[in-house]
Length: 90
Image 1 (cartoon, rainbow, N blue to C red):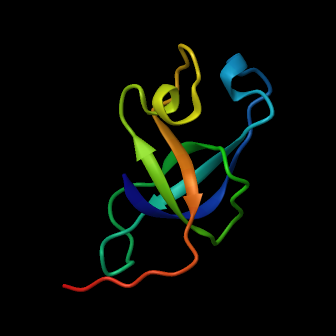
Image 2 (image 1 turned 60 degrees about the horizontal axis):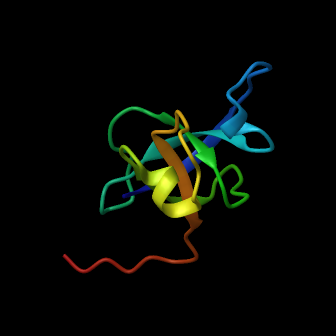
């Protein structure tokens, strides 16, 4: 899992059925200091996040199946939660 910031939406007219009624978000991974880390990625939104929100993104094989009970779906990253606040002790 990682923290990320929603920076936009990706639009597709043809998509896999697992994406139906879901928004594809462009998210920027964040470091523990909440600064940009690496390149932006696309994640499937399961919580209704919006641009500017800090979110928790789950990534890896089987995450969608384990968290949301989906069958076989081509989903690598998904937005699992909107973060209300953070407190990181280093």
